[in-house]
Image (cartoon, rainbow, N blue to C red):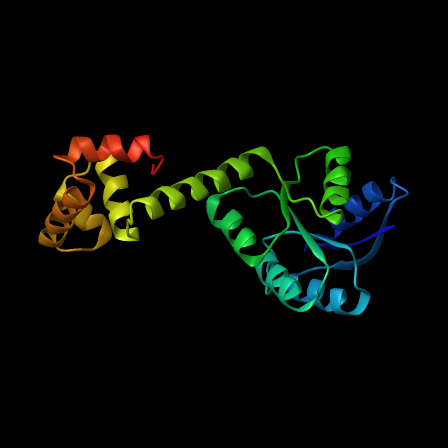
Length: 208
């Protein structure tokens, strides 16, 4: 039996999810929480196998709850179930230690299968969320390979957007001279000749 806690600030959604999960004889909902703090406190008391965690909740959101659970309650898996798939929300969930990230638009069978997979130790991410995470990993690896700083990556992205030094300076709140010198150092580091080659380099190495 997989014991589950549902954390969502909308009571009717919790009830709906509970009804859906009740259809499967291998899953039992043992508790409900309206925010991340309540979810954490229930985990301490009930020691569930999986927490279905919404991300955007008042007072203590899903990021808070996920981080507290993963830091303090051994063995509990956290599967984010939310309507949001923007980069900020995904990054917050992943950095907090979520074991999976799926969207509420998924059909009931996929939600149930995701719970079972996460309970079994398999990380589950919806397609668009996985692509976002994979892209970030590729960018980080490419930057690491060439010893690029965060600032240099910003320069590359803005050059690819067609920004000149003045526009880059305005967007990054830097002096124009600082941008000019930074791009000169970047050209030297990468052994490239001009901004066009920088743009090609960024695209080829999946930095944008």
